[in-house]
Length: 185
Length: 184
Image 1 (cartoon, rainbow over the protein chains, first blue to last red):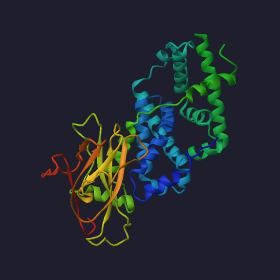
Image 2: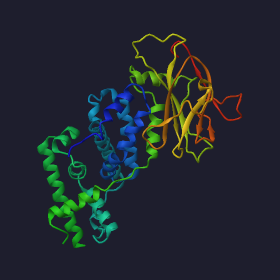
Image 3: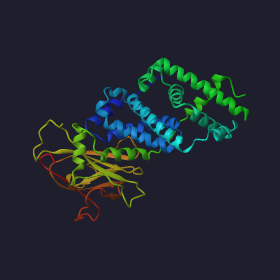
Image 4: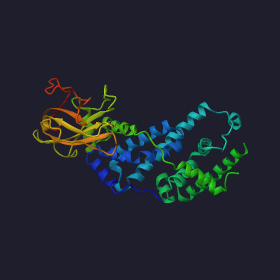
């Protein structure tokens, strides 16, 4: 499926912004807001953090727009900025978690959500996704949710295709193991 | 048992692929941030805009108090047509200004002012993608202008971030924009 601009006007909008039409940037923000927001939300597991990172990514992209060499691929370029911002935010959140929550025994004993019903299924998915290592979560989301090709993922993440395939494979195995764990409860 | 491995993974992926709605107010926050924070290393066109915005006599963006129903916000941005290598324009040369109004509930917005004889039909603003954002670009020669936004054919909005006009000739709120010469 890959990363595609919506229609053919991404480049035109980027050029208008580069020429000084600041308002044209609002078109690009509106166009990519929800799709990029979905990735940030699933990656960070928290709407507030996701919106903060998304806003930061849009602002950073605007400030760096002169470095967007290929305006036709603005979407992919913006995606790369968001992926990096999510990594930074995820690492920060992980450090916070290590400082304030470190009780493996309690975590082991914590009740798991049941698989019945839509709400519980949503809980299961979010719970399982949050337990994936961030690299695996990133690879799984880009491959199976954003439906990118491995070559596009490699460009976005800086990782090799083989490494990404391995991360996706591990993510799938880990998710499957977690579903079995839920099933036993 | 849930499903076979691939079915279970696909079910998770399908669940995660559902559209997510992000608060459209994020658009306004982004636009506010990019029009109020100077761009670092601004040797570019946009850098010129930021430098212009930082000067004390210019307009910057602030929330529109007292008009919560419209949730409106406005800013005027200079659109320099020259890069940093170009000489400053002569004092009589017109320069392009972008007027931006955030008014999510509006259906029609016009810019009115001294520069168009306060004629609401001459300078309609257009939506800039976001449901909330209205923009128009107007060339202005150096001088002092009164202006306002005319919303839905009935409501006048002064620019909350600009100085208020003292002489309200039309009995409605308006704002003042001073366009300096010599590249200011």
